[in-house]
Structures are given as structure tokens and as C-alpha cells.
Image 1 (cartoon, rainbow, N blue to C red):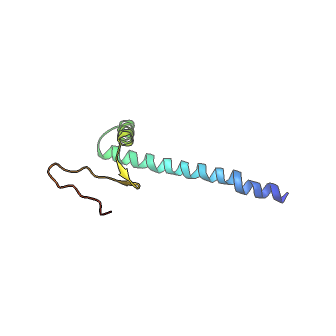
Image 2: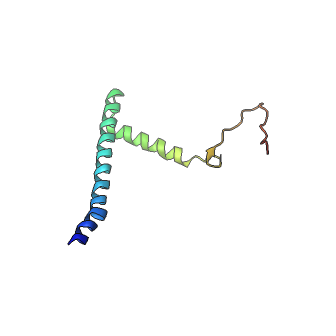
Image 3: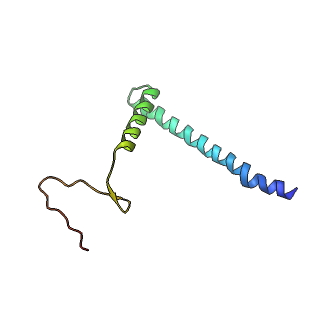
Amino acid sequence: MSTNRSRWFTTERTEFLDLLVISITCLLCLSAAKEIAAMENRPVGELISSLARRARLAAETKVKSRNGVPLLKARKGTPRVIDGR
């Protein structure tokens, strides 16, 4: 009987807690979206759609990185920085 109980604590309880955290996060996001939409006099669905579009576009842009650090684009006319190696 103790093995069944310990298994519940490790699998089903963890899954339940994960779903609970996700649900609470969704409710908080929806509440924030409603407040922002009210401030901007926009429907909540329109606000959520525009935020989703912006997030998708941001994810699609390719950013060059070195060792996990994003590289900034050089401005025209600025001298090139040479690595000290």
C-alpha cells in the first residue's frame, strides 16, 4: 500500500500541481489582458491576438549570437571591434 501512495505523490500529484500552476497563470494573464484592454479601449480578443502576433514575429526574427549572447548590429561608419585573441 505504501508503494501506491508514494507513486501518487510522485506522478499524479506532480501532474495535478503542474496543471494548477498553468491554470492560475492563465487566469492571471487573462486578468492582466482585461485591464490593458480596458485602458486602451480595445476588445480583449483583439489585444490578445495582437500580442500573439508580435510574439510570433519576434520569435521568427533571426538574431546572430556568439556563445549564447545576442550580437548587436554595427552602425554605419563605426569602427569594427577586433577580438583580442
